[in-house]
Amino acid sequence: MGRQLRFRSGAESPSESDSRNVAAHTSDYHFDFFSFLRILFRHRRWLAAAVLGAGVLAAGITLLIPNKYTATARLLPSGGSGKLSALAGITGLPMLDIAGGLGASENSSKLFPAILQSDLMKNIALNHVYSFTDDGHKFHITLLEYFNEYNLDRARAELDAITSVSSEFKTGIITLSVITRYPELSAAVAQLYIDELDLFNRTRRKTRATEYEKFVSQRLVETQSELAESEIKLSQFQGINRDWAFSSDPELQMELLKLKRDLVIKGKTFAFITQQHELARSETQKNLPVVQALDEPAVPLIKTSPRRTMTVLFAMFAAGIFGVGIIFIRESLVGGARGVDRESFRNLRSDLSVAYPRLSKRFESAGDQADNQRYDVKEFS
Image (cartoon, rainbow, N blue to C red; front, top):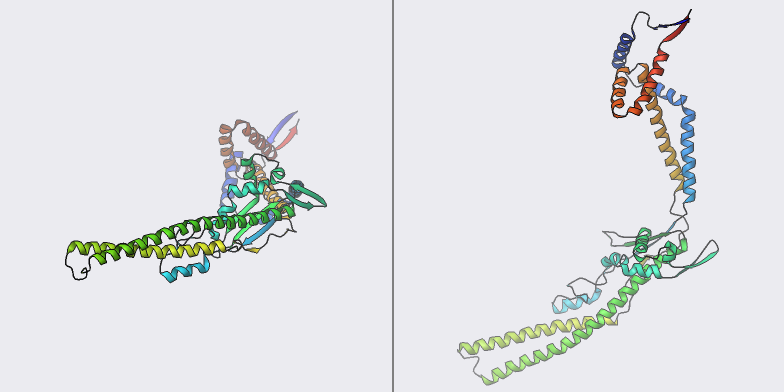
């Protein structure tokens, strides 16, 4: 018994046949859509199993993630001192605001995002006891208990993750969002932020205004006294020097100009302090809410996350794309080993054998399998 190898091409050698196939394939290469569908159809069961498996896995993971609910509030912008600025127009002097700056209000809504995100507000929100019901169960917990984190630094980081504060550039409207596992808790935390922001602004403004009024009142008395003193000095000088209007003495005229200049300065200072005193008195008498909510934080009825349907569909789509890629990589390797791109396959196998010796064994087995399919083996005696 013996074995004889015969080539299908008859008199042609394997190298000549491969070279001819490579040349023909290079010159006539084109994408065959039906071959593409045929390959997919041949692996349809494996591809369907991969897609369904990814969908089931994604569904199982999303079911383990608890639902989360977002409560959102929108705050209207607030300006400076409002109609009080009209007092500045009466005197023609610039208005010094209670915050200590020219034309800038301490209660401007531009400061609200920074106040809401301050450690002061976070500490208040973390230590406040929230009472709410969920699924028939009553809860009385703090956010420290909700996070199960009693380190303030880490707890503040957890709070940052569930809160969002943004401001619209054109309208100045501020949006505050809080997301938790409980709808009523989300609304309660958002409402606490608004209440504390309003209290902070009103209390701070009232305190600063009261202190400023006391300071301005004292300064007004001093300025009035200085103005009266300047008037007396000028009057006494003119009384002593009755011919000051016709005198050509340079020292006399210089002293007169100095006294008049001092009187003008004291008069303008007195007018400015009087204006600020009226502003301070008006601010201390105001007791209006600083924060005005356009949309109050209502209890959300629809969960925000997780989006299970979209997650499952995306996982199935990604698995399908990945599966198609694997199928065509495998077909390309087997096709190259069979002779269509044999030369390129050999070069790739050579490069991989140098870089990855273990991986090269797989290519060698694929090439041997293709060679066995390429030739007919007949037995003879």
